[in-house]
Image (tube, rainbow, N blue to C red; front, side):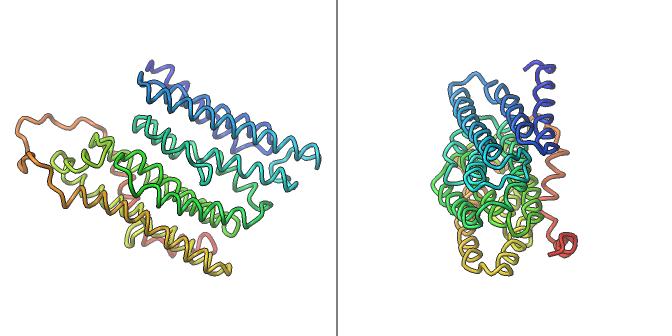
Length: 349
């Protein structure tokens, strides 16, 4: 892709998100979401491949539907209540429609069906943008709308997403689909606590972005798209393979890795709010996710692909990828758990 065009598209991505962050009026927020969608579409379709074009078309249709629903919800609220302000979305029909539209935007269950299919058709770099940056603007709106939404709807969306995210990933062999289901499960955890402790949602989102970035960058460095390709990656870069396993376990939420921090604080907060059943269900669904992460770890460490030499191949070329971003996010994805008391104090938990 032409570097000037790429710069314009990436700038538009940034502009769309910042516009939604800064807006208090529904039309301006909607405009930011639209700029965001239109900017990523050429990035998704730049691979001249039928699967990429199909993924782009699916993404465009779902995002256009969600944008239309947001416009409908905000117009309905303006008509019935007389308010365009985002935080004054008070009419029950408008609030529910807006929440479901934003759920469709980010890919929460039960409106998640587009996400694994779309992510499967993209290259890893665009998949990373879709899984991280594209979640920010809808989440900013969700956090503002959440206080007026029926809490049963939010808890249902959260628990259903953690369940679907764990269940859907069990039978997959494609790593991009596994990461898509992992994304759905993590979004479920964030939404589950949104009404009770918005600061925890923000913490979970930051941790999710760090861990997912590390996972995508690792796969890109290893050039692995399937479990079979992952199984032979240890011959290319043994250290990276060892770290990749820890990153996957961190995504699963195992102590003593960073991914345990948001899960721990969310379960604690849910119990404080008098929702022990929801906390138990969420913890149980986390085991489903953990199973498929462990499956990836097993494929990487305990299976040896036939016909691979354990010795380093002498004619292999030097590694030319830039690994500084990967090193930084991997370090953060593995070592932030000791900061939990400081984070809890900062968030007044």
